[in-house]
Length: 188
Image (tube, helix red, strand yellow):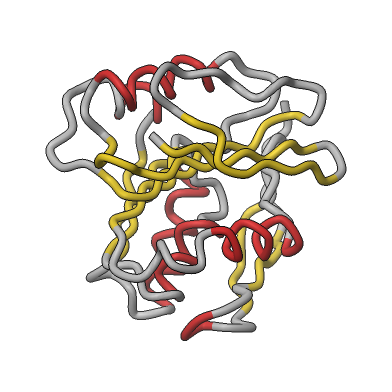
């Protein structure tokens, strides 16, 4: 598999960095959430982002966590397994002067949530590779290992041909489809 890097950008859609474009690396399987999907998601989260602790697993471009920071989240932790993609995300946090509120971990997401949480999160974003079986395992570990505050919101993006995941104790709050993606917001 050729992992030659090429330059792309993401655009932050609202908040203090509204309209700001940031470089991201192109990688096979890396699918930044579209502006349309992010706009819908953050309309759903309108009253939940300010002051929240956010976890962006399978962070990739970091678009979801960066959008949270732009809209007043207290913090965002980005977990990304690809070292080059994680380094670009770290650089973008530095460009935005957001190193005090944003942190990047170059780590496997499944391993990361496989341990007990030191502190739970209010908002969690899950956008694993569509062709993997990681989603159910990560959702279970989030629940079992104390990664979620009571009433936490968990956003899941998966292939549109897949049914929404059923996790005991989680309720589907909102859902939609766009192109090849199904997006679901759960409340734990």
